[in-house]
Length: 503
Image (tube, rainbow, N blue to C red; front, top):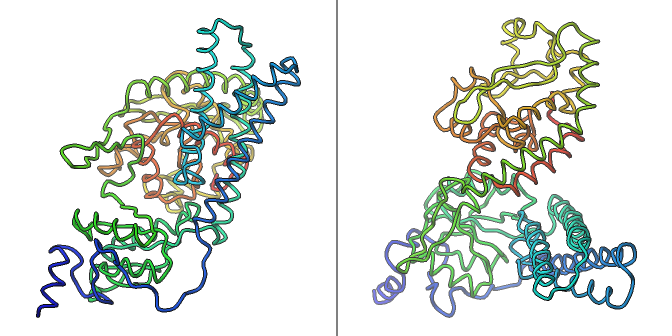
């Protein structure tokens, strides 16, 4: 009885209840787990992989900056000792600022836009510092150094990061360079997290098992075997060489979660908590330490500077793209007009931001009587949700199939972008009839301007289910940024070159 009382006294009420696999140990003690009885198989540690990856990033950035500096000194500037010394100083400063901007933080390497943003921030800071120095010291600074040399170094560094990142993702797709991950929580919460992590292996999480509140509960229905109860987490981490523990749902009280972090500190594993607030990420979330609490502040509206930046990007880049695409649009319009009766362009009423209607322009890819023939094809609809789609739609012309395959029929929408009715990036512009069938939460996608491209465009296009399309659109609406828009535009180029899901 004394042992039971002491054991209960070491475990606060309300946490780690239920049947466990082994004896309970205090997570706050110096020994929250027992050493493994026998050494298990040796697994490739992510700590080793990330160390090697970080070294490659440092060398890649240094090589990029050195290459840009060498070309600048040899081609643009005079190759004298003073110029070489100045360029070397700027190069060293750029690498230092990349590090200060957390460009080599293991939490950003190979996962997320943080490593790209660090290079862009560092390049911007170097440019500002150079101009400030020239003004204060009253020295002549070549404009080419600020507007040519620094951007060239940044672009080369970004290219190096991209190549190394894709190589890492290929390794992860093949099952290498993964973090051994344990998910803890209620079985339903575990299933949800495991499914999401398995669907995005390039993030580097390999789920080796799960811990549930009690071994008396039925286990998860997915592919995660139950390795113990929540009380066994520290021991499971040691026995199975777990590197990351993911807490799903609310299996622990706040104090229990804190104590678990103490135990994982001794076990050598990272702790990740899946918040109840889904599909919302930085920059909308900030932690506010207040009155001894960690308050999670969620940005509910985009700040005006970000809205202005997006508007400027749409107008200036939209005009540039429209001018560049004008010959292609003209040639395609002639091909459409010559090969099938009817106008070259197709104008259709669509629903824009906050439900406002506008006329969207496209190159006509179907026969002129396509709308009249749609009723006879409803039974053959292969679209998702409220969308009407057919892979072999008989209404599509021969030229139209080519235009759709490479998204050339969408190019006239650049005119809508320039007019301010659409954005370069955003949710797909819906028809009025589709909006009338929207469920409650789907209306959220109308909060921003519809886009010429979007997450749906770079994630599968017509091959996506309706639910997945909505989820991607809502994720964009809740988390958009100018950096995200630039990344989506870049990925759109790849999606157009390799047009999977376009019909």
